[in-house]
Image (cartoon, rainbow, N blue to C red; front, side, top):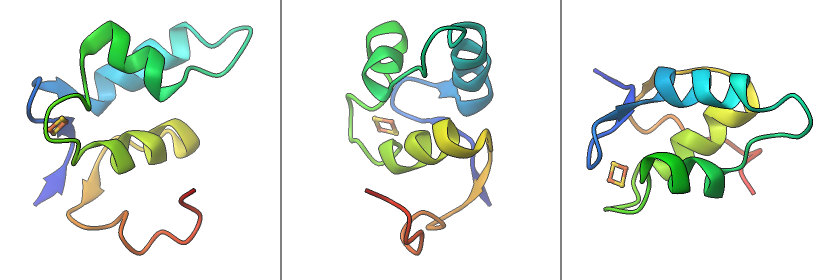
Amino acid sequence: MNVDRCVCFNVSFARLQKFAAANSADTTVSLEQLQTAFGCGRGCGLCIPYIRKMLRTGQTTFPVGSTTTDQSMP
Ligand code: FES
């Protein structure tokens, strides 16, 4: 089973990544900008580490728990 979306707001990481790519010409899209545009991460918050990783890597699907062993997390 993979994690591919913010379940609370039913928004896929692929959709977030597409938005980030389309809006990052001058600067990097932040988690806060995605939260403002889509509401993602403002429910239970479990998707936030995955969204951060998506913004860093462009990856849009993750094995469950894969961010807990990511040593590059801030
Ligand atoms: S899964 Fe994104 S806020 Fe709950």
